[in-house]
Image (tube, one colour):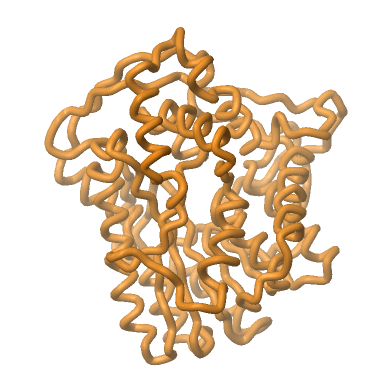
Length: 397
C-alpha cells in the first residue's frame, strides 16, 4: 500500500515502516560516529520503542555493545492498517541489533502490569542472569493499577488558577491565546499515579527481590523542568507534581539498592518534539522558538544526541556523575543557558501568526513531528508500494 500521513488533531494515525527504519538507522549511525562508550553490558529499557527510551536503547547497544531487553506497548500491523510507529521502530532496532551480532529481545505489553514485570524478570533470568542498567522511560496517559485494578488517567492542567497564554497550531502556523482551567485534587492524584514514580519503584523492588540486578546496578528515569514560560502549565501543574514524585522516588529506590551498591538517578532532559509534547498547549510555540535559537548557536540536540551525551559524558565518563543540588543529572543544561532563555523570552513577546515564520523554526518542528511517524525522512521513497505487515524478530511471545 501507499502510506501517507493521516492527521487527527495532534495525532498521526499512520506510520511508515521504511521511514521508521531509516530513523533508527540514522540514530545508530550517529552513536557509532561518536565512538565507543564504556557503559553497561546488560540493559533493560522500560518504554523502549520511541523517544528517549528508543535512543537510550540505541546508545547502549551500539555505543557499548550491550545486550538489551526492551519493554513497550505497541500496536502491531494488520492488513490495510499500519502499526504504531513504536512497533516499526522496534522492528528496525531488532533487525539492526541482530545484524550486528547483539543480543536483543522485546516484550510487547502493559509495563504497568505485574504480568509483564514477571515475564521480563523471567526473560532476564533465562537469558542474561542479571542486568546492570535499567532505563525507565514510560510515557503513557493511562495506567491500570496492578493492585486495585482501577484505571487512572493523567491530565495536563495548571494548579490553583486558570492558565492563559499563547500557543500555536503547528499544522497551520496560527498563533492564538488559550486558557486552561485548573485541576481538581482528583486530577492531581490521578496524574501522579500515572506519571509519578510508583511504577518505577515497583519494577525495581520486584527485580531486586528476584535477584536480577547485578552488583552496582544503576537505574535512571527521565524528567523535564523547562523555563518560566511553561512552568504554570507544566512544572507547576499536574505533570510537574508527577515529576516531583518521580524525582523523590529516586531517593527511595536508591536506599533500597544500597544492598547491592546500586544507584537510582533522574536525568532532566531537553524539550523535544514528541507525541506527548505536541498536545501540550504552549510547548509547540516554545519549542519552535527554542529550536531556532539553539540551531543558530550550534547547540541543538534531538533525542539521540541527548542520550548519547548522557551515556558518554555523564553516566559512564569515568568520574562521579555530576548532579544539581537536588541530585538530578542535567542534560537540559544547554536549553536552560541564560543566553538561550533570554532570547526565547524576547521572541515570545514578538510571536504572532505573522512573525513566527521569521523568528521561529516551525518547519523544523513539523519535520520532527512527521519523523516520529516515519514521514519526511530523507532517502525514503514515499511513492513506493510498502508492505505494512512487518513482523518483529526477537519478540517474546
